[in-house]
Length: 308
Image (cartoon, rainbow, N blue to C red; front, side, top):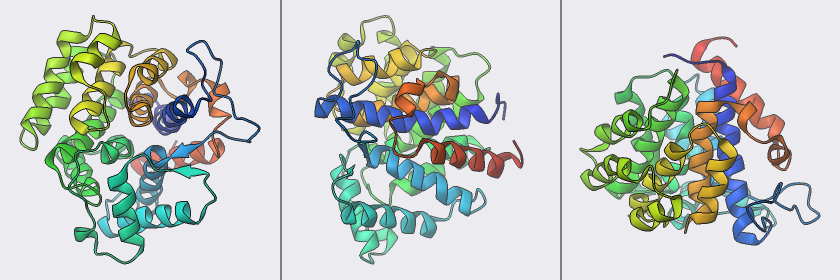
């Protein structure tokens, strides 16, 4: 695996959290217009976060605790605990994916991990898949792990393929020495073709829209919460502006029908390619626990490679 340094790991995790936050801020009116320097915290110490980044960070923590191995039971327990904390919190965490909410609650109430999932096309499993793409694993292994974690909450093939696509896309981004959008989209589409041919075809077809304004691309591709829309939309937004975290995230959030999920995925991808230094510090400081996220990224890097 070719990589720059641990900064890309931090970029992927912080980018996911920031993209989630910016999307949530836009929905709640805390991000008033594209020229805003940052979401408005409305007197709170931090802006809201959701399952889009919360479960991604829970997955990353579990990978660290498991020494980089994928333990389905441990991941299921982690997802259930996250949901239990959310249920016990006083409105500080939000769940935008109904399938994840139902399934994760089933997990903490004792449901078997192989029976917890909902037959849903939503992109909830894709929004949390980024940590798997950071591991030093083969494409086949990353695909398998992404599908397994997705099956804890989602059973529809498009949701499973969407999770695999984002994990593979993050892996492509974190490995990249130079970035070529056409090759990137092909590398993401081909491995998921056997799971969801329609999604794979839609990802490959994104090359046609790279030169179009993003609003036009989203109109043609779709930007709903469905994996068939949200995953290609996130890949398109990132591939159009791969080297500008802020531009890619803000434009995607303002154009999307599902800004939280798409914002989180675009943030993960851009952070993995460009590193934490590319994520605006003024946004990072609005996260609930940015230092903890950076320490988690360092731990995940050590788990993958043995040292910083």
